[in-house]
Image (cartoon, rainbow, N blue to C red; front, top):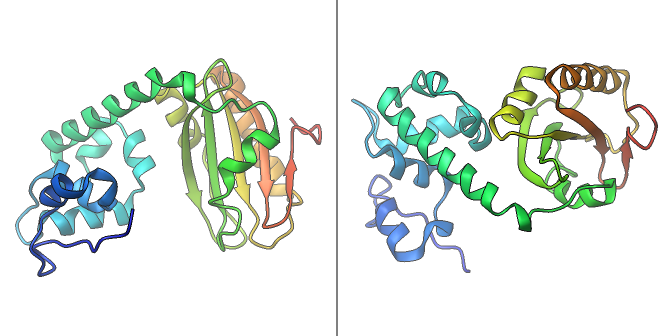
Length: 227
């Protein structure tokens, strides 16, 4: 499908996101336009389009989908009512995905995982993400947990396992890129893997592997015997 300009009344165009959705379908809309449709209204001094953009500048889609109601309600421009609306929309999407598990990728080896990491392989900043699997090792959710600097990425176990609990994952696979081009794990990588594996043991959610990738190479800590 050819890209179409994102026209909004705010930008001087003639079509609002709802009209574009009806005309072109949801796949033609940007994330902020879809969010604006869900929110419906902004607040004094800020249109719904501005509010939607600000929210997505501060929180990724994956972050929003993993938030509890109270956390969503505290985001400026949401409040309890709109937070409930978003939570309901995310839950419907989550349930739909669960019904489609028969078509979900089966991840048993690093070779199965690598195609899912193409979007971070050549990033110029470290992207740390998690792949959440069901009991049959099928992918049920993929989420970027942290975007760091060229040399470091801050990851906390609660950020990793919050979504694991939300999507009822049985296990997870960790992955991050090395912008330097050298996929060799650093001491920090090994320590982070150890901490997350220990947290997973406590929660009954196994960390199956940690893949470190660069533009031309990868390292599997499972294959290296670290996990």
